[in-house]
Length: 167
Image (cartoon, rainbow, N blue to C red):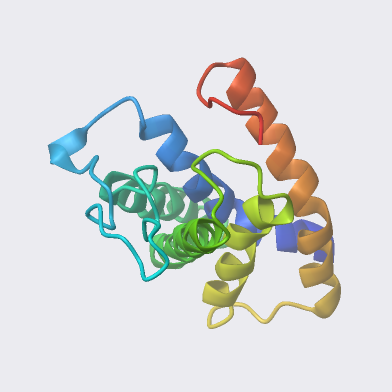
């Protein structure tokens, strides 16, 4: 398979995991739509991650990632386990990004530039490393195209009224 296509396929679970919280935000399944940080405030007086990072988002990010891994397993390109791990990596990266934004005193939904688009993909790549030995050119490709893909997906989500902001 072509190197760039392989890189994109490996990150499909991450992209779906990153979209899962947005798709599931209208629901409160099993009471999971509650903040991960439990409303706790950090040493700087700001929330740890904020109301936008919920247990439901984490659960469904892993489920979406695992589902995509399962679908890709039909062609021996991934597995449910790998997709779930990459999905968790993506949502973990998103949590790290949110934690960082709160430390920078940015409010929920406030544009943080590249941090908003790079946090999830960097951690998804890190979590994928035990399963796939990425070539440097694959990593660079993903890091270069990710801001464009991420922004495009967010604009579509905004137009469809799934997101309040287009970033």
